[in-house]
Image (cartoon, rainbow, N blue to C red; front, side, top):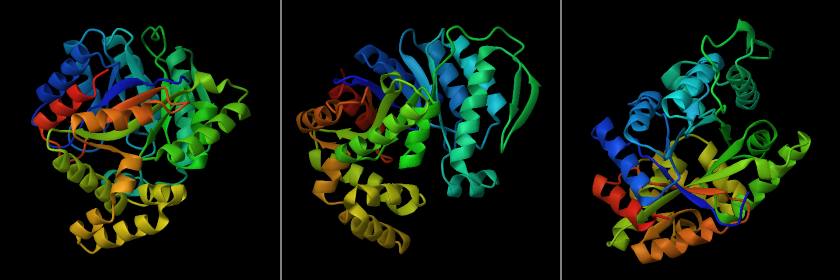
Length: 335
């Protein structure tokens, strides 16, 4: 972990007209000096196909999944996928895993959500075993594997395996078993609290916490129209806290904003989107995201990049950002 965070780009999945547009955004990020592009897998285009296309269109920038759900693919398949993307990208791939939430897992994939912490741990352990190229024999609560082995040379080096987490136990798990932790939607004080959890997890595994890479996904909008930037990010935060299950709401409550989280949720659930957005006041907006004119955004971004213990800050975009706004923000916050 370092004192001055590097910069990545978190590619948006919403309202992208084509895979070509996502590839162009990755190419532009490479031109601007960003270190890595991350792509989540939610609905619509799958991350693996898109990242394969990006790997062929770029030369140096790293690629990674942030985050691919652990419930939609088996651990063995995730290991095969990581090995293949590492080969396709000539060693530029990093695998980010996470449990997602019950709304996505149960409603969209038809799988029982069960114990996400235990399932994440087993998935990380199995993926790492697969990537060694050795035969995998694993006896877990969720997975029993016998005799699986890659029918190709294992990647050299093996890609890192990161885990996402918002709560204390999930972050502790990342520190104990994964190569990195993906953080999102946290205030600067909240990040520091979770870094304590990460260090505790590393200590339980007798690991150096400096060996666990911390990547913060930070929602950003840097536009000449500063008010448009702030309203776009405000809507984005209200959507996640109000409409995407309990995890974002619980996370906001844990870091001192319980009343606000409940107000956002209640308004969003009753269909009063404007009231939900209004509940995201300026103080909270600036504590958890970056929004404003390019000059304002650069200054606010720097506060997050300077957090001791955060290795990389990933420039993420609001749900309703247009292609022009994505390009403007990417350019304004370039390294």
